[in-house]
Amino acid sequence: MSELDLMIIGAQKAGTTSLLTYLRKHPQLNAHFGNEFSYFADEKSYKQGFQNAYNTYFTSKKGALKNVAKNVTICTNESAIQRLKHDFPNVKIVFILREPVSRTYSGYNMGVSQGWVHHSFQDIISAVLSNDSKSDLYSLFVSLGLYTEQIEILLKYFQSSQIRFILFEEFKTNPSITCNRICKWLEVDPMDNEDISQAHNVTTKSKSRQIASFINTLKKESNPIKQLLRQLLPYSIYSKIGSGLQSLNETEAKFDSMPDSDRKILKDHFGPFNSKLKSLLQQPQFEKSIEWVGRDNWLFNSKS
Image 1 (cartoon, rainbow, N blue to C red):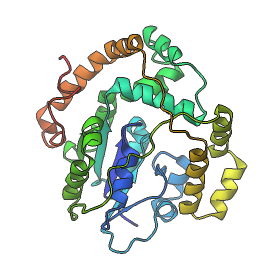
Image 2: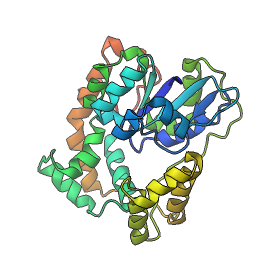
Image 3: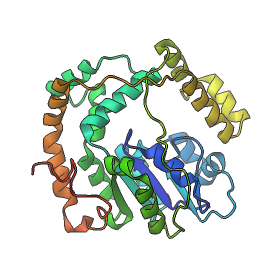
Protein backbone atom coordinates (compact mmCIF):
# COMPACT_ATOMS: atom_id res chain seq x y z
CA MET A 1 0.00 0.00 0.00
CA SER A 2 1.20 3.53 -0.75
CA GLU A 3 2.33 5.60 2.22
CA LEU A 4 0.91 8.89 3.46
CA ASP A 5 3.57 11.13 4.97
CA LEU A 6 1.78 14.41 5.68
CA MET A 7 -1.88 15.17 6.35
CA ILE A 8 -3.20 18.74 6.45
CA ILE A 9 -6.35 18.54 8.57
CA GLY A 10 -7.64 22.11 8.90
CA ALA A 11 -8.93 24.54 9.58
CA GLN A 12 -11.48 25.48 6.94
CA LYS A 13 -10.74 28.90 5.37
CA ALA A 14 -7.25 28.97 6.89
CA GLY A 15 -5.08 28.73 3.79
CA THR A 16 -4.98 24.95 3.52
CA THR A 17 -5.66 24.92 -0.23
CA SER A 18 -2.83 27.38 -0.80
CA LEU A 19 -0.48 25.27 1.31
CA LEU A 20 -1.40 22.08 -0.57
CA THR A 21 -0.93 23.85 -3.91
CA TYR A 22 2.49 25.19 -2.93
CA LEU A 23 3.69 21.80 -1.68
CA ARG A 24 2.41 20.15 -4.85
CA LYS A 25 4.98 22.20 -6.81
CA HIS A 26 7.88 20.62 -4.91
CA PRO A 27 9.57 17.97 -7.09
CA GLN A 28 9.96 15.59 -4.15
CA LEU A 29 6.39 15.90 -2.89
CA ASN A 30 3.33 14.28 -4.44
CA ALA A 31 0.03 15.94 -3.55
CA HIS A 32 -3.40 14.90 -4.81
CA PHE A 33 -5.58 16.70 -7.35
CA GLY A 34 -8.61 18.60 -6.07
CA ASN A 35 -8.91 20.55 -2.86
CA GLU A 36 -9.88 17.71 -0.54
CA PHE A 37 -8.82 14.08 -0.14
CA SER A 38 -12.10 12.64 1.13
CA TYR A 39 -10.95 9.09 1.86
CA PHE A 40 -10.87 9.21 5.68
CA ALA A 41 -14.14 11.14 6.00
CA ASP A 42 -16.12 9.21 3.38
CA GLU A 43 -17.58 5.86 4.46
CA LYS A 44 -17.91 4.45 0.95
CA SER A 45 -14.41 5.49 -0.09
CA TYR A 46 -12.86 4.13 3.10
CA LYS A 47 -14.46 0.73 2.62
CA GLN A 48 -12.82 0.53 -0.81
CA GLY A 49 -9.37 0.93 0.74
CA PHE A 50 -6.63 3.52 0.68
CA GLN A 51 -4.91 2.21 -2.41
CA ASN A 52 -8.08 2.66 -4.44
CA ALA A 53 -8.43 6.24 -3.21
CA TYR A 54 -4.74 6.90 -3.83
CA ASN A 55 -4.99 5.67 -7.41
CA THR A 56 -8.02 7.92 -7.92
CA TYR A 57 -6.68 11.16 -6.43
CA PHE A 58 -2.94 10.90 -7.01
CA THR A 59 -0.89 10.46 -10.16
CA SER A 60 2.58 9.07 -10.55
CA LYS A 61 5.25 11.73 -10.05
CA LYS A 62 8.82 10.93 -10.97
CA GLY A 63 11.25 11.81 -8.20
CA ALA A 64 8.58 12.18 -5.51
CA LEU A 65 9.65 10.89 -2.10
CA LYS A 66 6.68 11.84 0.09
CA ASN A 67 2.89 11.91 -0.28
CA VAL A 68 0.85 14.86 0.99
CA ALA A 69 -2.93 15.02 1.46
CA LYS A 70 -5.48 17.47 2.83
CA ASN A 71 -8.99 17.33 4.20
CA VAL A 72 -10.28 20.11 6.42
CA THR A 73 -13.34 18.21 7.65
CA ILE A 74 -11.49 15.54 9.58
CA CYS A 75 -10.37 17.87 12.39
CA THR A 76 -13.99 17.78 13.62
CA ASN A 77 -14.62 14.14 12.70
CA GLU A 78 -13.32 11.70 15.30
CA SER A 79 -14.10 8.67 13.14
CA ALA A 80 -11.93 10.11 10.38
CA ILE A 81 -9.12 10.76 12.86
CA GLN A 82 -9.39 7.15 14.04
CA ARG A 83 -9.12 5.94 10.45
CA LEU A 84 -6.07 8.11 9.82
CA LYS A 85 -4.43 6.64 12.93
CA HIS A 86 -5.35 3.08 11.94
CA ASP A 87 -3.98 3.37 8.42
CA PHE A 88 -0.99 5.63 9.06
CA PRO A 89 -0.01 5.70 12.73
CA ASN A 90 3.24 7.57 12.01
CA VAL A 91 1.83 10.25 9.71
CA LYS A 92 2.83 13.87 10.32
CA ILE A 93 -0.02 16.33 10.77
CA VAL A 94 -0.31 20.04 10.01
CA PHE A 95 -3.12 22.05 11.58
CA ILE A 96 -3.48 25.69 10.47
CA LEU A 97 -5.31 27.86 13.01
CA ARG A 98 -7.01 31.09 11.99
CA GLU A 99 -8.33 33.78 14.30
CA PRO A 100 -11.83 32.36 14.80
CA VAL A 101 -13.89 35.53 14.34
CA SER A 102 -12.42 36.11 10.87
CA ARG A 103 -12.61 32.40 10.10
CA THR A 104 -16.33 32.35 10.93
CA TYR A 105 -17.11 35.24 8.61
CA SER A 106 -14.93 33.86 5.81
CA GLY A 107 -16.62 30.46 6.09
CA TYR A 108 -20.03 32.07 5.89
CA ASN A 109 -19.09 34.13 2.84
CA MET A 110 -17.73 31.01 1.14
CA GLY A 111 -21.08 29.28 1.68
CA VAL A 112 -22.96 32.23 0.21
CA SER A 113 -20.61 32.45 -2.76
CA GLN A 114 -20.92 28.72 -3.46
CA GLY A 115 -24.69 28.73 -3.18
CA TRP A 116 -25.22 26.43 -0.21
CA VAL A 117 -25.94 29.09 2.41
CA HIS A 118 -29.15 31.11 2.24
CA HIS A 119 -29.27 32.48 5.78
CA SER A 120 -28.14 35.97 6.74
CA PHE A 121 -25.07 36.43 8.91
CA GLN A 122 -27.39 37.85 11.53
CA ASP A 123 -28.88 34.36 11.89
CA ILE A 124 -25.44 33.16 12.99
CA ILE A 125 -25.11 36.07 15.41
CA SER A 126 -28.53 35.18 16.84
CA ALA A 127 -27.40 31.59 17.39
CA VAL A 128 -24.35 32.88 19.26
CA LEU A 129 -26.33 35.32 21.40
CA SER A 130 -28.81 32.59 22.33
CA ASN A 131 -25.93 30.17 22.95
CA ASP A 132 -27.61 27.70 20.60
CA SER A 133 -24.59 25.45 20.11
CA LYS A 134 -26.82 22.66 18.79
CA SER A 135 -28.07 24.67 15.80
CA ASP A 136 -26.83 23.89 12.31
CA LEU A 137 -25.56 27.43 11.82
CA TYR A 138 -23.48 27.28 14.99
CA SER A 139 -22.08 23.89 14.02
CA LEU A 140 -21.30 24.94 10.44
CA PHE A 141 -19.61 28.23 11.19
CA VAL A 142 -18.86 28.87 14.87
CA SER A 143 -17.83 25.50 16.26
CA LEU A 144 -15.16 25.11 13.57
CA GLY A 145 -13.23 27.83 15.43
CA LEU A 146 -13.34 26.01 18.77
CA TYR A 147 -9.90 24.51 18.24
CA THR A 148 -9.30 23.13 21.73
CA GLU A 149 -12.02 20.50 21.31
CA GLN A 150 -10.55 19.43 17.97
CA ILE A 151 -7.01 19.21 19.35
CA GLU A 152 -8.14 17.17 22.34
CA ILE A 153 -9.71 14.62 19.98
CA LEU A 154 -6.52 14.58 17.90
CA LEU A 155 -4.43 13.86 21.01
CA LYS A 156 -6.48 10.77 21.78
CA TYR A 157 -4.89 9.12 18.75
CA PHE A 158 -1.62 10.92 17.95
CA GLN A 159 1.43 12.08 19.86
CA SER A 160 1.95 15.83 20.04
CA SER A 161 5.35 15.30 18.41
CA GLN A 162 3.53 14.29 15.22
CA ILE A 163 1.64 17.60 15.03
CA ARG A 164 2.72 21.06 13.93
CA PHE A 165 0.50 24.10 14.33
CA ILE A 166 0.64 27.07 11.96
CA LEU A 167 -1.14 30.39 12.28
CA PHE A 168 -2.91 31.45 9.11
CA GLU A 169 -1.98 35.09 9.63
CA GLU A 170 1.74 34.24 9.77
CA PHE A 171 1.52 31.80 6.87
CA LYS A 172 -0.26 34.42 4.74
CA THR A 173 2.48 36.97 5.44
CA ASN A 174 5.38 34.71 4.48
CA PRO A 175 4.33 31.37 2.96
CA SER A 176 7.85 30.43 1.88
CA ILE A 177 9.01 30.21 5.52
CA THR A 178 6.16 27.85 6.37
CA CYS A 179 6.70 25.69 3.28
CA ASN A 180 10.41 25.28 3.95
CA ARG A 181 9.80 24.42 7.59
CA ILE A 182 7.51 21.65 6.40
CA CYS A 183 10.11 20.50 3.85
CA LYS A 184 12.74 20.27 6.57
CA TRP A 185 10.33 18.34 8.81
CA LEU A 186 9.62 15.92 5.94
CA GLU A 187 13.35 15.64 5.20
CA VAL A 188 13.14 16.81 1.60
CA ASP A 189 15.01 19.59 -0.15
CA PRO A 190 14.02 23.22 0.47
CA MET A 191 11.63 24.77 -2.02
CA ASP A 192 13.57 26.67 -4.67
CA ASN A 193 12.15 29.34 -6.96
CA GLU A 194 8.60 27.98 -6.92
CA ASP A 195 5.85 30.58 -7.16
CA ILE A 196 4.24 30.45 -3.74
CA SER A 197 2.90 33.97 -3.51
CA GLN A 198 -0.55 33.54 -5.09
CA ALA A 199 -3.36 32.73 -2.68
CA HIS A 200 -5.74 29.94 -3.69
CA ASN A 201 -9.43 29.30 -2.93
CA VAL A 202 -9.96 32.97 -2.07
CA THR A 203 -13.63 33.76 -1.41
CA THR A 204 -15.21 36.41 -3.63
CA LYS A 205 -18.77 37.24 -4.60
CA SER A 206 -20.47 35.11 -7.25
CA LYS A 207 -22.03 36.53 -10.39
CA SER A 208 -25.31 34.76 -9.72
CA ARG A 209 -26.56 33.06 -6.57
CA GLN A 210 -28.93 30.98 -8.68
CA ILE A 211 -26.06 29.63 -10.79
CA ALA A 212 -24.01 29.05 -7.63
CA SER A 213 -26.86 27.02 -6.15
CA PHE A 214 -27.15 25.01 -9.38
CA ILE A 215 -23.40 24.25 -9.38
CA ASN A 216 -23.64 23.24 -5.74
CA THR A 217 -26.42 20.80 -6.64
CA LEU A 218 -24.25 19.31 -9.39
CA LYS A 219 -21.43 18.78 -6.87
CA LYS A 220 -23.52 16.73 -4.45
CA GLU A 221 -22.51 13.08 -4.18
CA SER A 222 -26.10 11.97 -4.90
CA ASN A 223 -26.23 13.83 -8.22
CA PRO A 224 -26.31 11.30 -11.10
CA ILE A 225 -24.37 13.64 -13.42
CA LYS A 226 -21.54 13.81 -10.91
CA GLN A 227 -21.59 10.05 -10.45
CA LEU A 228 -21.41 9.49 -14.21
CA LEU A 229 -18.54 11.95 -14.72
CA ARG A 230 -16.52 10.37 -11.92
CA GLN A 231 -16.90 6.98 -13.59
CA LEU A 232 -15.93 8.24 -17.03
CA LEU A 233 -13.13 10.72 -16.30
CA PRO A 234 -9.79 10.58 -14.51
CA TYR A 235 -10.02 12.46 -11.23
CA SER A 236 -7.45 15.02 -12.36
CA ILE A 237 -9.77 16.06 -15.21
CA TYR A 238 -12.97 15.73 -13.21
CA SER A 239 -11.66 18.00 -10.44
CA LYS A 240 -10.68 20.66 -12.98
CA ILE A 241 -14.20 20.64 -14.44
CA GLY A 242 -15.69 21.20 -10.99
CA SER A 243 -13.37 24.05 -10.08
CA GLY A 244 -13.70 25.50 -13.59
CA LEU A 245 -17.48 25.69 -13.39
CA GLN A 246 -17.25 27.45 -10.06
CA SER A 247 -14.62 29.90 -11.25
CA LEU A 248 -16.78 30.90 -14.23
CA ASN A 249 -19.36 32.20 -11.77
CA GLU A 250 -16.86 34.08 -9.61
CA THR A 251 -16.12 37.79 -9.66
CA GLU A 252 -13.21 39.74 -8.23
CA ALA A 253 -15.53 41.59 -5.87
CA LYS A 254 -14.89 40.99 -2.19
CA PHE A 255 -17.56 40.77 0.47
CA ASP A 256 -18.17 43.73 2.76
CA SER A 257 -16.28 43.80 6.03
CA MET A 258 -17.98 42.37 9.07
CA PRO A 259 -19.89 45.01 11.06
CA ASP A 260 -18.01 46.06 14.20
CA SER A 261 -20.98 45.14 16.39
CA ASP A 262 -21.02 41.57 15.05
CA ARG A 263 -17.24 41.31 15.41
CA LYS A 264 -17.47 42.31 19.08
CA ILE A 265 -20.17 39.72 19.77
CA LEU A 266 -18.07 36.97 18.20
CA LYS A 267 -14.88 38.18 19.86
CA ASP A 268 -16.55 38.06 23.25
CA HIS A 269 -17.90 34.60 22.48
CA PHE A 270 -14.58 33.16 21.33
CA GLY A 271 -12.56 34.87 24.08
CA PRO A 272 -12.83 32.11 26.73
CA PHE A 273 -12.21 29.41 24.12
CA ASN A 274 -9.08 31.19 22.87
CA SER A 275 -7.79 31.46 26.44
CA LYS A 276 -8.34 27.75 26.91
CA LEU A 277 -6.50 27.07 23.64
CA LYS A 278 -3.57 29.22 24.77
CA SER A 279 -3.35 27.35 28.07
CA LEU A 280 -3.43 24.01 26.30
CA LEU A 281 -0.71 24.83 23.78
CA GLN A 282 1.55 26.29 26.48
CA GLN A 283 1.82 22.88 28.13
CA PRO A 284 5.34 21.36 27.86
CA GLN A 285 4.19 18.53 25.57
CA PHE A 286 3.46 21.08 22.82
CA GLU A 287 6.90 22.68 22.81
CA LYS A 288 7.76 21.19 19.41
CA SER A 289 4.20 21.44 18.07
CA ILE A 290 4.14 25.24 18.37
CA GLU A 291 7.76 25.93 17.47
CA TRP A 292 6.63 27.52 14.17
CA VAL A 293 4.16 29.85 15.91
CA GLY A 294 5.18 33.38 16.89
CA ARG A 295 4.19 34.90 20.21
CA ASP A 296 2.84 38.27 19.08
CA ASN A 297 -0.55 37.22 17.72
CA TRP A 298 -4.22 36.67 18.57
CA LEU A 299 -3.44 33.31 20.17
CA PHE A 300 -0.74 34.18 22.67
CA ASN A 301 -2.10 37.67 23.32
CA SER A 302 -5.45 36.29 24.41
CA LYS A 303 -6.30 36.79 28.07
CA SER A 304 -5.85 33.73 30.29
